[in-house]
Image (cartoon, rainbow, N blue to C red):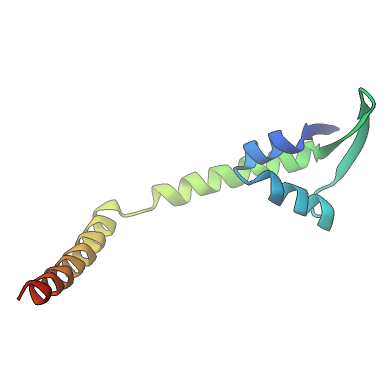
Length: 98
């Protein structure tokens, strides 16, 4: 079964720009269906039920990867980098004032 979704909705759903969705349709990366509505041709992205299932699985994988982050270590690394930059900045300020 195919689900049809507009380019704008596809972009919002996948958090990418409309321009990138159009590029993917032009390159053939996304299957499209063109329908005529109110005298205008409208392009839809054709999603199969298996691709919808795959996107759900990829979201679950991303959540699991995010859960594996050691936030304490990440904070310590960023704090260390901040202190180094703060010291360099202070030395520059002291040179300019002195």
